[in-house]
Image (tube, rainbow over all chains, first blue to last red; front, top):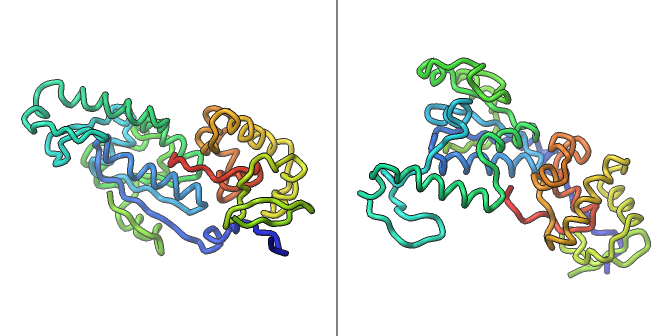
Length: 174
Length: 104
């Protein structure tokens, strides 16, 4: 028993101005999630969070593709489904239908954990106050405009803009 | 596990201060818990708090922010407005529950 009540200190990080920036550069289903989950965790801790989508990471915010990311065994050194140690020969991963099947399986595993699909996840992050930015060079390369992207994306910005925005932030490249 | 005195009562808490025995909680205690972390409870605050308590009865674990939003029907944005900074932790503290364990 103590005299002063034990009370959690919730506002330490908020006051410290901690900032996190995550560069999302991959368009595979399995590589989309780490950035989304970490961003969600950081936002829940009151940390100012910025996501910068570049190159294949654009598939995560392109309205055409964001709901259809895929998981493939091709070129993946972890040739097994999560939770199974049973290896799959790499030639099988290249067979027609293999990527569709493994994508379907992984989506089910993710949804069984009650983790949302990418578009809904972006909504969750947006509602939590996440800042989302798209890379200017990637947009030019892919001939995409702001209206092609998820509405929560605040702007298409240059690498320099991003560096300025994330002054003092902790940085992750995924 | 330590105990601490909240609203004149001896309450079991973990090292951080979250209640470890949800049955020691009632709405009167919630008022003091809220005051402890600088929140003044309004009607709007009670909606997610009641949801957390009800959900805990069946799930035996604290609902994550997403669950409060999808199952409880309260937009995430609103939860951030009601419990600024760390909504999931602040809500569960006031509801007399452990902080959520789920990642999402």
